[in-house]
Each structure stands twice: as structure tokens, then as C-alpha cells.
View 1 (cartoon, rainbow, N blue to C red):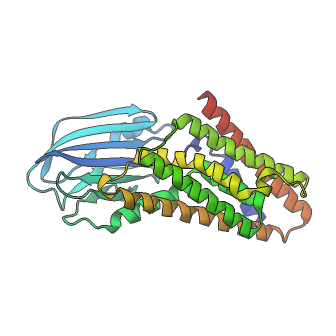
View 2 (view 1 turned 45 degrees about the vertical axis):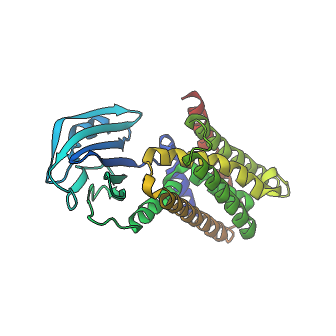
Length: 330
């Protein structure tokens, strides 16, 4: 158990530059006039993959469609952007659209937006980089795909992940952890929904810096508790209040991710609900695993417990500090 915990945070230390929130790629086939479509895509790039993907990636279009004019590609904000105009003879239902490939284990949200029918949403993976347009869209597809994206966002979005782990390390007791996690969920749901619906919003860069600051704040409090177990820090006294306050900030981060992914306007409520459910499921998984690891760690000698927890805490604090500086100075 101890080795597993040390390995986990060694992995986290190895990925400081991948700290920003998970932002899946997006592919959208939109009908602009009867028989005329645009295929737009934005593929998130990893370091060193820009040239490789730009040269190899090509759009996948239905058999009864053809590209009109040239395919336009450009690299912008760590993403490969592309557009192709299509002319289609008849209904493209049954045909495939997407991309020739996605690098690594990345995934993408694909949307088919017809003029006079509901939007269809799909999830693409590195193994299935194109999807089939349905004659009758499934109402469950949005729920399934956006819940998966929500779960991935908390599990693989390193900043949110470290915040939840630090919160559990600080609060420890199961019932206070549950209350704090619930407050965090309610708070980020409020700002997420309000931002998506246009009632609120904050610029992305300050939000990401504040998210990093929330991690540093909790890491400092955990370090204080390790030195003085009886010390009543702010979070120890009011765990749900602190979790709620920082949850409001993290909600703006979730909203930024959804803004990049996009939402089907005809199924907005379902997509928001599914994304929130996915985030909550991922969060509960992280909380449960952390509690289990801490329970296993209690069987070790006190000196071992202290060293593992101290190493973990300083690792979280160091990563959070790095992200904070990076996001402030750009």
C-alpha cells in the first residue's frame, strides 16, 4: 500500500506540464443549407505532436458527401484547428464522420447538427476515431458521453484531482469528508450551470491560478496538522465552508472545459446533468480510494505513516506551487 502511494505521487510529479484541466478534442458536422455542411475540428495537442498530427490527420466524411474547396488547417492555442466544406447528395444518415486518427489515448466529442432535427452527440476514441450518423438519434447518447467526459475531467484533470486528495488528507474522518465533498459538489455545480447559461463567468487564466492556489492552501494546512495534530486550522474547523468556497472557483474551471468541448443546445439540460453526474462519480471514486489508502497506511508504524504523509503533502504543495507560478506568469 505504501509503495503504491509513493508510486502514485511520483507519477504526478512527472506530469507538471500536463496540469491544466482535461480538454477533449471536438469534431462537429453542421448543416448550414440543405445539402451543404461544414466539418470543423479542434484536436488538443501534446508537446511535440503538432507537426506529426498536422501532416497525418484528415477528415472522415460520409460516402455521399464530397469536400468542396480546400481543407483549412492551423495550429492555435495548443490545438490543431481544421475546417472543410462538404456537399452531400441526400441524407448523410448511415455515413461516418470524424477524423483519420487521434494521437495517444485522447478522446473527442463528435456532434452532428442538422437543420431540422435534434443534435446527435458521440464520443470518439483513439481506437474509434469516426462515428456513424444515426437516422433516429438515441436520447441516451448525450447522457452516456457527457457523463464519461465529466468523470475523466475529475480523474485525469490533475488540479481538481489533487485538490480532492488534499481535502481528504486534511479532514480524514469519513463523515466530515462526505459533507465537505458534498459542499464542493454543490458549489461547483452552481457556478458551472450559471456560467454555461450566461449568468456569470470569470476569465480562464485567473480561475486556473485560483485553482492552483486552493491546492497550495490545503497542502499548507495538511503540513501544519502533521507538525501539530491538535491544531485547529480553518479547514479543520469549517471543512464544508472551505470546500464550498473553493468549489465555486473550481466550477468556473469546469465551465471553461465545457466551453471548449461545447454543448448540444437542443439537449443542454441533459448534457449539463450528465457532466455533473460524471464529475461526482469521479470525485467519489477519488475520495474512496484515498480513504482506503489511508486506512491501509494506519497499519504501518507511526514513523512510516508520518514520512509517507509528509512526502505526499509536500509533493502536492510543490506541484500546486509550480502551477500557481506558471499560471500567473504565463
